[in-house]
Every structure is written in C-alpha cells, then in structure tokens.
Length: 287
Image 1 (cartoon, rainbow, N blue to C red):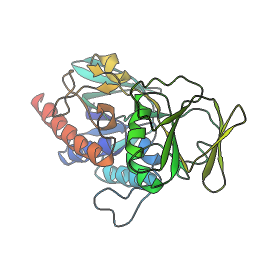
Image 2: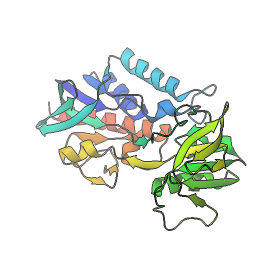
Image 3: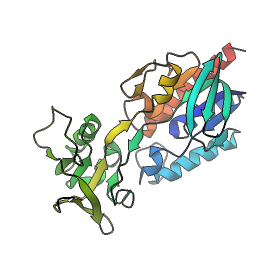
Image 4: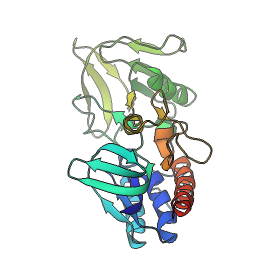
C-alpha cells in the first residue's frame, strides 16, 4: 500500500510529490501523459528560468526531480477510484491501494480531428491565451470553440491582438454576452494551413480566413469524472476544494487546473505544495 497516490504528472502532481517524498512517505504518481504543459511551445513567465524553455522539457525535468527523491512514476490511464477506509485506484492494467489520493489530472484541452492542428502546435496553434497572447501582439488570430471557455480565451486576446475571430467549426455559438468586436464564423473547418507557421483557416465551403494564430478552446473535457465516481463534489467541470485543497471526501485532495481558476504553472505548483502537505498530515493522523 502507498501512503499517497497522485493522479497526474504535471506541475501540480509533481509539486505535491516532492513534499510527500521528503516527508518519507511512500508516493506513487500515475499519469497517461505530460498533460497541457507538454503542448506549451515556450515557457518564459515562470520563476527561475534562466532562458525560455519548452513546456515538455520543463515537465520532464520535474518528473526526474521527483524520481530522484524516490517517487514512483508510471504511465497508465486511471479509469476509476473506489473508497472504503482506504483508496483503490484502478488503471487500465491493474489496481493500486493508498491511504490518500491527490487528483492533479489537469483539464483536458479537446482537440478536434482537423488537419493541421497537431502539425502546427507551437507554430501558430496554441492552447493557452494567457501563455501565448504576447507572441501575437498586433496580429490577427482565431479562437476555435463555441462556448464560455472559448470566450475566456478571446477576452484574454482582445487587449493584445489586432483582431480575434471565434470559429465554431459548424456548431452554434453558445455565448450570448460577447464583445461586438468579435466576429463569429460558424462554418465547418477543413484544415489549418500555412508554411513554416499558420497562415489560414480553410473552410469546407472553400472560403478562407487569414490568421497568424489559432487558439484551441473547444469546451473543457472535465477532469471531475474521477471525483464524481467517488462522490466528491464538483461544480460544473471543476473539482470543489477548500483553501487547503481538501475535497468533500476525506483523504481525497485536488490541485492544479482541475480545480479551475488560473491555468498557469505557478498556480498549479502552489496548489500542489498545499495538497502534498495536507496529504502528509492526513496520512499521519491515521497512523
């Protein structure tokens, strides 16, 4: 049995594990991939970086840091959690038991099967307006999405770019209260095209929209599914926590993007530290 299992190996989960390992508690991190951080082309607004760094590199450094402290890290997909005085974390392959669990699964950025999206990641396709708006100062961009998440990204871009267009990919725009300066194109997208960088969005009606960048904000596939399965309270797509990262289930904590708010590495690291320290205290209280 582990003292703490952390689900998610992004900055929130890794941050939590560092405190747990240094408290001499047995810790396991389970994560399918590196999460949203790996898609960040350049990180330059995080403390301590001597020079800009790819998000994937920063994520890999964090994982190695945890491993060097004795944290076990495995790449598996978690499909469920059961709770009966202790926790049973189920993956596609097997089941793991722990005294406490930290959910640090992030928020999945939904990527539609549109040609060019993956090819131009970091070359004009972005998943975070707060992170990358700076690189599009005075330029024309599009936000791919039709809901409140897309509108949030648009509002971050408006003060920086010269023009932002909501592209819904054939779906109706679900945002009623939006800026009059934001055009909405409800046509289906055929492809994102360009050369070295994004230049156009091609629609299935053979029209085109010239853009310098495309921000993907199609819904937010909720990370709260695991919380719901175990009976923890959720609000919309976010896991509800108190100021110390406790969920409504004793011994279950959550941190990072899955709790909502600012989707930034700095916020994830802070919440991870809190969750780690609270998990340590919880495990000790049960000994």
